[in-house]
Length: 173
Image 1 (cartoon, one colour):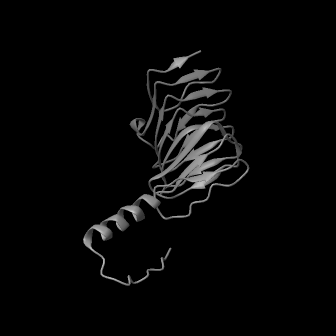
Image 2 (cartoon, rainbow, N blue to C red):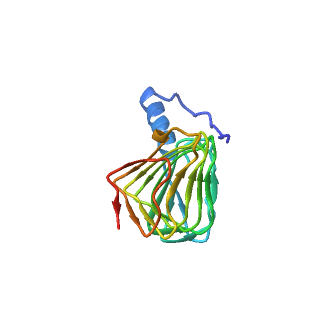
Image 3 (tube, rainbow, N blue to C red):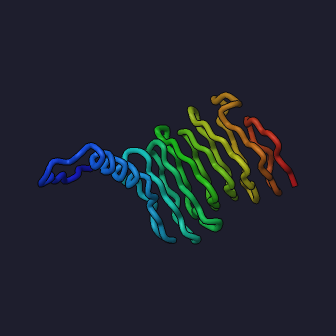
């Protein structure tokens, strides 16, 4: 992505130059607000940030580094969500109503999973305070180390045990 740079009509002092750099850096941190029924698109090579309104979303493929997706309690993905091998993402407060495939590095905070999550060879994932229901459970590809997938302080209701994962403090109902 290129920017048009105007030459100042007067000499710019170093404090003004610093202010412009801070503003440019902060612009990159403003999340992309996504409304229901829209697709999450990665507009940058790194640091994509999405803030979801309550509603339903299609799944997606996430492949950039240092990306974040922040749900609002009932932000639900209806189709398969995939984090590719280059992807590094953090998901918070999202509901996954379809399968999830992880080949990259991901942390899920306070998310709900209703279908299976598969962590493929080379993938790493942490599930922190998540809720697994219906058919939701984590399956770590046997080629991964058991420490590559960790389920921490989560709850599993009416679903089978996680496979090849490190589980710490899970409630099973």
